[in-house]
Structures are given as structure tokens and as C-alpha cells.
Length: 210
Image 1 (cartoon, helix red, strand yellow):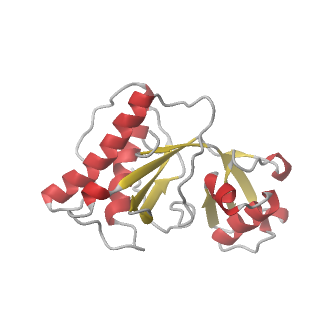
Image 2: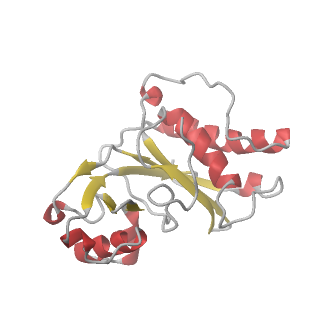
């Protein structure tokens, strides 16, 4: 099994921001959201209690068949309203409950933009989860700002932006495409010149709105 990595192309998004976006109707029930958020917090606190940060989590039993379905997941950590870590899987490589545990731990300790979360900080963290649908090819004119996230790739480079990013930054569709290309390290017009364009949606919820 691959493990989530911060700041790697197409895997962790440094542009993840808080937003109130989720598809309608929500796929995950209030009880499932509460369970997943608790699992994310527990994954971080368990690592701190053991005084070791291991990419390998203990065996976890699926809470429900629904939460055993493989999904892409991004976990964002906020401390006093500021981003404290963000790591995720783009593709559905793990059951959603396990992907949440893995990405929460990686966001706390493996995002190289930030120092590892401390025991003093952990109780004050606010967690936000973005659970992704599988990316699928899309024509540029079919992209809907606020509904779709983008994964653009070409020549071995990949860039990803989540659906809430263009909404928060007030981008139109063209700017969204250009900025995703930029995230990949590609020319901003690569989307017009043969780059692969995949779209996905995300159900976003967190401690503030679970």
C-alpha cells in the first residue's frame, strides 16, 4: 500500500482551504462523519502517546461496509484558524476509514511545510476531511466551478486543486484550469495543448460543520 506524501505532485495540495462545500445530497451521514473525524483525531493522539510516528497503523476493523469502500481522501489540520498540515490520497487506494486515519497522521507529522504537531497542540486541532469521488476525464467546457476539483497531468507532472479552491479565490473556469496547470509545474495553457484533464467532486466536512 502506498502512503500519503505531503507536497508531492498530485498528492498533497498546498492550496486546500476551508470551505462549506459538499455535494447534495451528502453521501456520508452525520454519524459516519462524526466517526471519521473521531478516527482522525485518535490517529494523531495515538501516535503522540506512543512517542513514535510510524506510517504503519495498527489493524483497524471497518466500522461499516460503506466506510470500507476505497476512496481518495484529503485531511487538513487547522490550529487557531491557520492551516497546520494537509496530506491526502488522490486515488481510491485504501478504504475510506483507513485513508482518513493515514492521512490525518501524515498531515500531523509528515507535511514538510510544518513542524510535527505537538502534544500541546493536538487537543486544539480542528480537522477537515475532503472525501473524493474517483477522477474521470472531462472536457474543459463541462467543468463547473464549485462542483469539480481538477487533476491535470502531462509529461510526468501532475497538479491537483480541490473544488473549494476556485470558489474561495473567485476564479472562473479558465483561471481554475490555468492554476491547476501551474500547480503541476506546467505552462498555464497546457490544458489547451494535450494535457490530461480529470475531474472529481469532494464531500467536505469537519469539526466545525460535521
